[in-house]
Length: 481
Image (cartoon, rainbow, N blue to C red; front, top):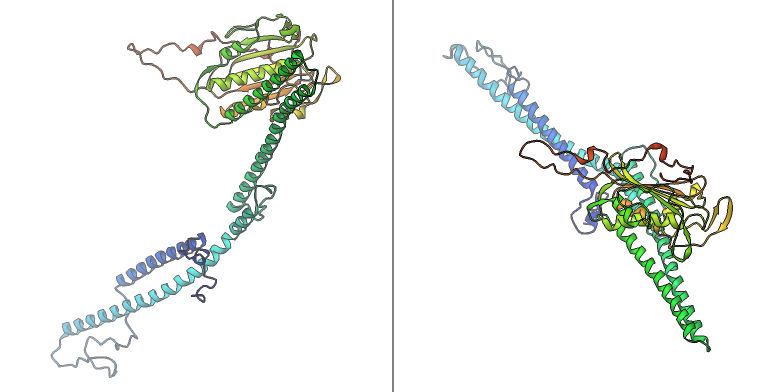
């Protein structure tokens, strides 16, 4: 048995089971196709020869054809000789000749069939051998790719197959696999950064809580007031942890492949989330609302909104969190108190797609850092406000825009952000068009009027009210985005 396993021993046979390799199947396929085509060719040849009535039968060992006159040729190998006067007429001689020709014809056809079958068998064996060799040569790049892929693990995703050769299907497969490895490497690296940053962000309030408690316990002169202050600081740290965990859960939920599908209107959500005194759902906020005072007497930016109906199909909770995060970021990352900060909000329909645009004044964001803001826990440490470098407090968990990107991706939409030349961001979110609603059939046969065919209830923004990239809007009346 060991001798039988030469270079024809397949990998599956060595493992004690029937070989099922692609090379083996290709070899059998090549051989089977050759057998079928050879058998068809043999059958056609046999049929054509059998139908040929002018087949000359000679030299087959049966003797020469007797003459119609029946004369003896004197050839010893000529078979029975019809002698003149033996009582055989012309008809008997012709019958005898036809019979002898038919016998010789059948013998030759039978011999042709046997010899062709032997030749076909030899060629089938040759085709199997050649098919095995050709299949091995064709599949050699696949074996190299399999060996290289087995060597790649989660710790060295930087390695690539790097298959060289002509631009055929195998090269395209290798390049596709390399692209997949590149995406996996990026995903794994992002996951590692996310876990490290999340651990750090969660450890910070825990460390603060422990430090506050240790200081309070170590103070022998601690009274009720100091202990109360310590408890308040511990509570604040716990609330920070709660907000961070809630943001992480929202981010995980936003990355789900199938969010809930319900009818949502961006104008309604934005109107409910706007600060007091802003635009209501489906209404427009007039310009000149002025800076408003928040809790604690802090000035917050002026918020101007132009809300037009923007229906979509999605998860109301996630879409609401998206609008809330964008508004919160626009207000939080703005110019300092008293410097005339503003935020503009616009909702509407663009090319059948529900859209939300938010722009704000604020620190200058480097153009190459705009995309980084959508990564988890990424914040700008030192920012420039109106030409002066200032170290800003790192507010928030750094998950706001990453949650926005995850929610938009889960809904099949797109988000675009641009840095404004004089500071702040311009962000636009576009959702896919909602599915068409079924049209009710009326008895009169007339279709009901389509409310979407008119501009009623929709506040489309004119081009002159949009904020182009790199140029701020008129801060004296920032009513358009």
